[in-house]
Length: 493
Image 1 (tube, helix red, strand yellow):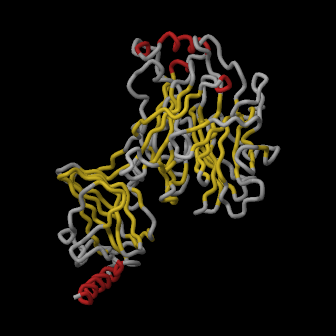
Image 2: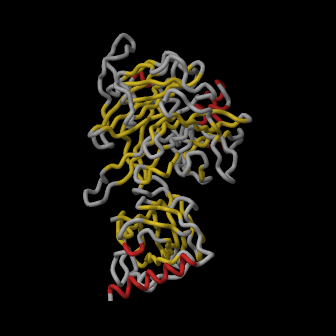
């Protein structure tokens, strides 16, 4: 029976390969594929569609209420470093409490740390003096530099004493910094490493082990519109000229921060979290937003300090240059309260942390962080959570829908899914030949209905879960959903 079953599969493949219509398969190997774009998709059917997900707000993890932190803490950078989680952020003075004046002190770079991503401390470092004391968590005084971000450099060729790298903007461009311990920083080079750009936002750099190069995502303008540009480097010192990101058919919107990072569970995919900047007309509706008197005071300093509104977006890319950017907000300003609907809402940290769920029986989740309440009082940093892989899903209602992939080639002996259904919902998978013919023992009718809510469930057909006979062959996957969401899939051993 076993031999007959696999002989039938092989015969089907001979026919598929011989077919002149068989498309060249996309090699996915054993990597995880997120249901995030059309790169592997041949067609949809029924009511299947993409569904943008949204973070769930959790607790306030930091109150930026120290005197040196001012009223505008932001541009948080977060990454795991062994058992420690490091956080860097800019402390800036925006307006005072009544909004009558602006920028009362220089900007600082501050540091915090955590073990779990939920409880954070601001260590006393004794490095930088503020009002006659070094009892603070400041690691750098701007001194002409601003918009600091940092990362741990895992490049095998990283030079001694440069295990942590960062960038700050300053006169003439973007400057590189280095550190041996993540706390004590100095310039890596006296001249700017990138000079073409504006850099007046959170400029991001990181090492990409998959493509073996450094990336920089930086701020610039075109036709008066805030934009994001990308540059690459082999050594962090010599960089290509920044090129404007492209977004397919997406509108030309003003984008403030970018937050681009390779997704750790699927590093061939970049995810980004740009902040969208929108200036509203002064109308009676604007006057109904929270704290109109303070907004009016800010507008006397500059009109956009009161008319600008920001929210958070989501985008993804497979080449680092062309992104699919969602027009709908990933993070809205939220229900109106006294201190929101501001120029500064929706600024997401750089970095994705896998953290334990509050429920000890639940699987881990992703933690991200957003600033709240800029301009007039201590900035708050709120943690929000996402399902692992949960940026976008393939979703279908109970009426059903399906998706068929382009021809692919995989390595592995089982197919696992990250998915969620209702109690009555389901998800089934059919494996087809490259020309779309159901393969024996892997047809839709052979597949048991998958139901539940799990990050990792292997697909079972009536003949079992072993797909190793198909490994290395050209196949298509057909996903059929009813009241279900599929977030990712992966072949593995």
